[in-house]
Length: 402
Ligand code: UDP
Image (cartoon, rainbow, N blue to C red; front, side):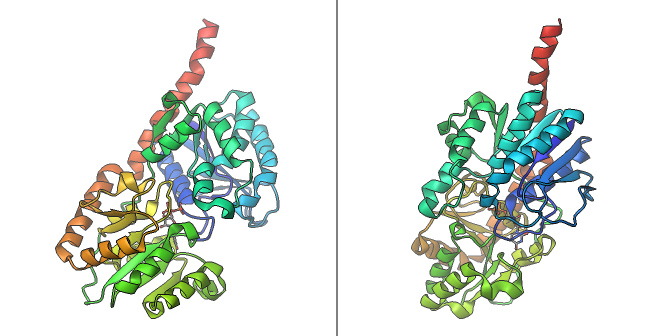
């Protein structure tokens, strides 16, 4: 198949860990790479945020990346991109009119809007993955949500008009149905993990105990709750990977906020901010951990828990979103309510005191990701959706010809 992916802010070739570069970038890159391995031709359309990068380039994994000029050729926060989405869609319409893809797969709502404007009139089937939903963000973040006001309505429209929606977890399906999606047009295909990169390593065994948090440093990731929980975990160290590059940590408002919190909790000297870590270097960060902690307020999917499991690490996560599917309580880790540092610290204290349980959870996590969450498997499931949607799009034409 000729597959067009649209990922307006999340370039598959971007450096990860910044405010707007995380799971979606990983997802698009890994899915595109696997689909190429399965014999498809894949082009990822993403917004140009660098004036010097070439317009079309082939990634080492074999997919094409096309940089679309829409808005200034510089980094723009994703919530400020909406005014340029019309231009983005017009570019796609021109490109697809003479190089028609068999299916379009849009990632995130603004990509969906641009893709729908281009694919709809050309009759190209559109598959949508939201990665995150405006209604959920608004519910949790209230007035601090900086999403464009058009977001929730646009997501509802995409639920009605896209040929198919791929949700990444069961929890998201409920949200999508509430947004007007019919259940016969939704499938679940989770995110995956690169099990060749993220492999099990033994615990350091140096007598010190370490918690590791990995992720974009945004408030909803719940790092402040881990910092608070540290107050009753005497002698335990917390390592936080993500955020700006290391030398810029002191200037980062979220780091300042978290340091302030750590000082108030009396744990400042035991909380270590590592800054953004290159994706290829992350396995060694997970290897330092006795427990990986991921306690977001809400989480559309959460690739970090999968990476932790692939590295044989037990996970203490919050019982939200994708973690409800990926983490099996008392088998691969523990799930706790979000925003409850008291319950979190009790769960961590128990697990840190129980080395055999940590080892058992770690081993079970490795088995679980290898069975259910390889990108090979995710790509096969996604390909099946593409095949069905493309066949449905062709069928009415064939019938008309007969
Ligand atoms: N990540 C990274 N370096 C960092 C911080 C994060 O490579 O310093 C990666 C991390 O390994 C994971 C992704 O960013 O693959 C975050 O994805 P997740 O789904 O957990 O969260 P999201 O960013 O989508 O909210």
